[in-house]
Length: 260
Image 1 (cartoon, rainbow, N blue to C red):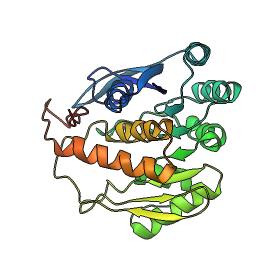
Image 2: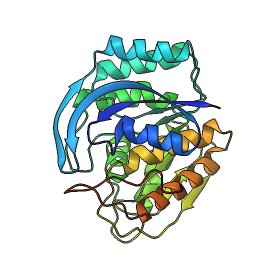
Image 3: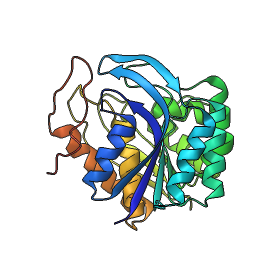
Image 4: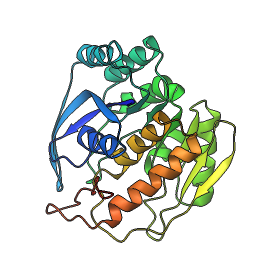
């Protein structure tokens, strides 16, 4: 059994972050490992507080994982400070990590900001060059690419910009559009692939980005190509959204175990 490491924040409500990643990895019949970067007090209604983990301790967690059960893939999610980003990048380089998926988490589904301004520059300089796949949504792609991302033309342009900047493959997610859930993937070789799907009519999308990125990491750990891993992950998330789980008073979580 292959292992997948999630480097991300903890969601006390269980719908996103580390908790969503563990469920996703388990649903793919792989072994989940974690390095916690932050503790959050949150639920389906929003985030009330964030406590960053000491960067040195983040590094120690990653070292402990790689020195014993080496992961076949790594998903990086919430890294809210430049110091934590530096610690994560140094550790991944030190251990020669492979199949790295970076989900540039900047804003929670509820709208709460989860990353500092200086961390954005550190993310672009240190983590994105290590990524085999980066998975921004439209607002995140706009921050990373440096221009507005509002339609298919700008989505494709942003994905091309990120891939050309050396991020490996770039997947710009179109879930912020109200009519469709079409995403665009630009591979490291420069191929443009549109992944089209109808939008699932649900208000319960808490943890969607975390789930997608960890599912992509699972696909890479299982030996799939980037495009195959992305297509499989998109299908998994579509099923988890369509299952109709309805928990909490706000934007509820997905049904990560929908296939079972």
